[in-house]
Length: 481
Image (cartoon, rainbow, N blue to C red; front, side, top):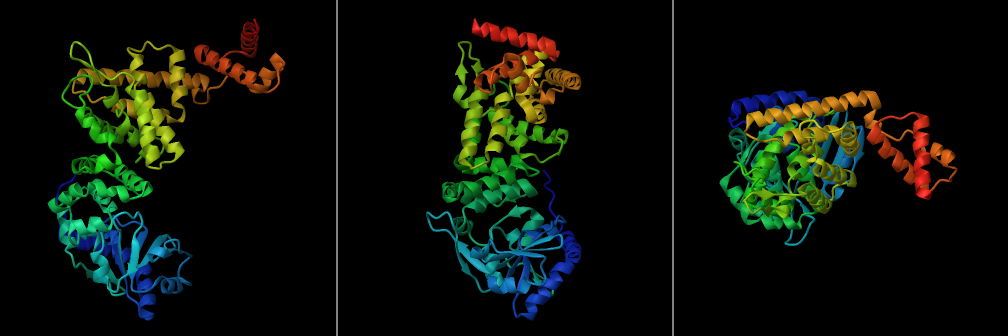
């Protein structure tokens, strides 16, 4: 992770260049609001990212105008307008390639038990900036004059790559506890550190995250894990106690030793597997970041605490931790309101992550290779990544041997795939042929016959129609007997 401080003059130069790039949008918008007697400013993340030279196409603005006025001023200028954030003072629109959100000056806070903010409008830019999460997000550029506003020293904190809050962190996190998760996310995204008082407040107030909806926590966790430095963000969650609230399976791993009794506990091993899986993401068709692959790496050993057993000779075993871990993963992801597809994919990878170790010195039959591919299905590329990343041994000879063995397995899979179309493996007879040969209607018996033929296909590879027909008739006859 980069730790070099950002030069302030470089940041300002980057910001100028980026503002010139978006000038057609911000200048026109500023002129419209100024003509209507309203104030408007580019604010928050876009200003920060402009200084970092990484401005995206999403632009956030804050304004003195009420939502109904904003909506009126956008008509005739925006290509499309939406108001799904009206309750929070936000009107969104699209102008060419730019996605724009304009929010009325506001202040918002949570009461002790609410999951939703109580929104009230503010009356000044400085007041609006003061209610933002961190000083690096509390900078603005007023329009149309493009004047830089930084009442809380955000540019210095940006240069030093540190996260501070505009006011007391305890007040900020009390207003919106999700900001504690955001701190970890920015650490993971930007390579920043958190100020000591921010870390202390996160630690003292970690249990307050419980009032935030699972969906909002999930979204922050996904952004963190898909960031360039997820290890750093996860470490912060664990060290402040936030992980105990949102992902307790992770800190629980710190109590366990790995099955080899070596230099690392399962927690450190897991974080290393995550980093190694990220390095392998270029093997995926779409590249990275890939949440499913990364979260499977993070969760692959969560079954170990429940399955740890001590043998008489002092060694430790974790039998069936793959199956137990898949169940734990599914339960945690359900609690965080992930989609059924994401839950199924991650849990399946966790359950399959040890399968390769039965391969030994390449003694699997072609049947075993076919079953490996069949069980992985569309997750095969991700399973390759997880299995390779799971090797964290310092024994270079052992690491090289495991890598060569997995290379050989992948070569066998590729060779069989070319011969047999493993990716879409199916029986040599379809349902209609089964019904015709056996003279039976659609129903459970056809499904049983299909399953028999699929197992036959996995065991012996492709068969001719006649051989498959003969085998099917023999199977049916044995069932009747």
